[in-house]
Image 1: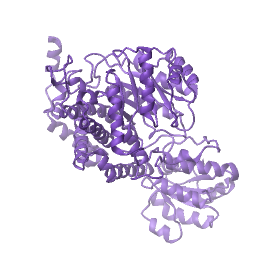
Image 2 (image 1 turned 90 degrees about the vertical axis):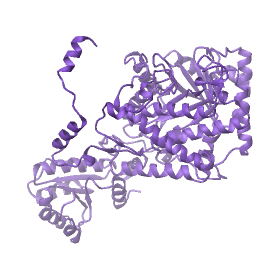
Image 3 (image 1 turned 180 degrees about the horizontal axis):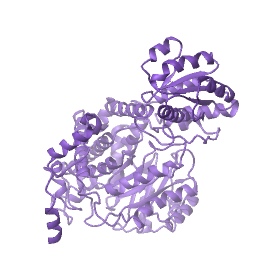
Image 4 (image 1 turned 60 degrees about the vertical axis):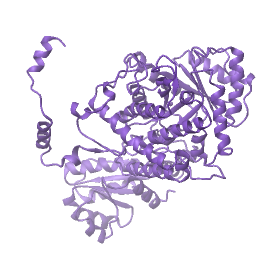
Length: 637
């Protein structure tokens, strides 16, 4: 800062927080500060409307540098490089290899090969799969559902045959028996044998420093409706469980830590998700340090002393399916773009952006190309890879990082007090916490306190889905084994329940015609327009055809219009004061010919109910419950 800048700043005297608060209260004009400006988050802390330097006093990590323990500001001293990953479903190895070579020329720097079923993959099949792929130039990840040890044994044979350079090999095998336990409700074999297998794989892979063999799939918590704090707290507890089990079996703590990779989901809470990754690195570094990993690497404090490089978290991020929709799917592009930005700014090591159509079909080539380019754009046009810890210095983000870390640490310690993650899961603690939060979030969507564009707000009224879609699209994904020992996590999308109502309407419409909700706006101009727009949006969410009108001069005129339109529902839209006279008049004329709805919650509601008017919608109406009831009235199942 030069002398001229200092002189300029001196002309603006400092403003105290008390002065700011005083002015804010004046501007609120009597409204309650807490209710108007304080955001009560799902994460267990409140967010203020603004933050100042005083809010980060006492925090240690803002003073650290990028690349320094505890790595809140990232693992690199310069730049913010991340890998662009795309997963490929392996139906046959030759086709998967062809696709891999194709997308490597289109910006991908990390490949994911997803194997379905439990067949053993042979060395020859792996050789075909990796043909022409330079292992020193691209990260390769393998996702198998079972027989992971046998898979890795074959992979090791191939790596030795190919003389893969340990210093340049970047690879992972997604072996996560604890994560599988949370989804299946049982271990595939007895528990001690499970962790003996993990130990064997880790020791087999010791030669390769950048080969991750233990996965912590926190993304499952994200896609089960968990909060950010729950995803982080439970993921850390899973990571600690692996560290404990491996070190108890005699594995060196530094080796164990370096073989673990975290796979997080990234949701739409932009700044929170960004801060989550910074908090994750902070907490994981401290957890690993407690196991006293030692080594003689360059970053170590001395031979046989604490090894900071073992405390570096490797975090892969995947855009969440929780936020994705089947209706108006192009909006998914907006969701995944902001989610990818959160992951980038938070310092993710690699990122998968799911194609916008991933939740309802095998992604098209167009959708996959857009998903790749979303990340390329952040690198090549926005240059987010050029600055280490681009989020640093923001009082808000630094405070969010500290708050998320504090709440996640409390949850982590609570799990440890219960005997560790597996014991806590067996007791039902983890599931009850996640389910409670998921229900809270679903209720927020149903009551439109949490908006999903195109579903519970501003639906595309001209859209209709193919009637041949599987109903599983609108149901939770349940992977529970038949002989499960415990309750499991269920994966689902936030939009599913409301989309299920709309899809039922689409199926009904294909056979019997689409229900029609006609507005009857009358009286006060401002109120009738506002309530007609609200009601159109409300019933369009169920897939009804909505018919609006500029306004009627008399009930008789409006009554004739809805009769001519053959309305399934008539929504009276006026002011609270006028409903006392207008609603009874319309009710008498309709004589049960169609369903009558009043838009609003007038003071005369009880009097109107007394004469038989039972249907009211307003901003406090639970959308899911109301639309379910209206579909039932119309014979839509």
